[in-house]
Image (cartoon, rainbow, N blue to C red; front, side, top):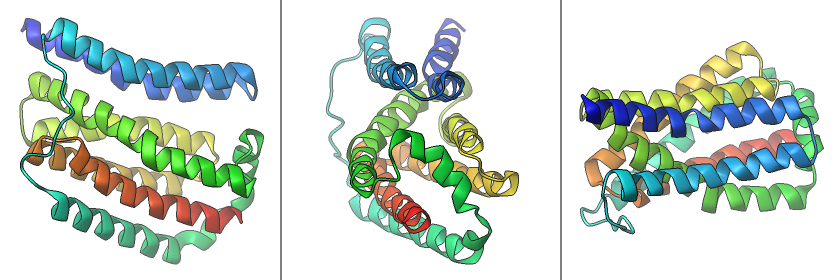
Length: 226
């Protein structure tokens, strides 16, 4: 019971941080305060899991080396999800109001093609890896302690993963129906990434699939904005 209480606390401290950050940044408006919240949240997500793992769980440092393979599976799933996203955009993209998205991104400079490209590189190479470290490694193992291994942990971690994305899409002005569709897709993606971690026990395997999907996401974003 004590292990489950600790796991729940860890999930709250880490899992709620991205959603809280999105809401606080939106409330703070543009400028230094919003940027400071963004940076502090990233530091929180980077530091709290490893401190918890080392100090409370008594774990040891590891680079999560893929020792059970999984590269082909990850690439295949990443490509399949990317194709599904592109098909959805082809069928439904005309219903998205590009002006709303532009208005949301303009204050942070993402309407500048160079800034957008740099942001894309950052998100694919660093932010996606941070999310795998947080949502797949840390939150999956805590979910396994709280609700049990296998599907229960996969579903819980995917639900946590989708919450801040849903909030962010609402902040960016996505219509409710587009947010619902996107959130379902993100939940499925999160579940696939969590399954990859559970199956292969390395954050690098789901990261490959995640990075491939982000290439498709930012490609669609560039099509909308430019």
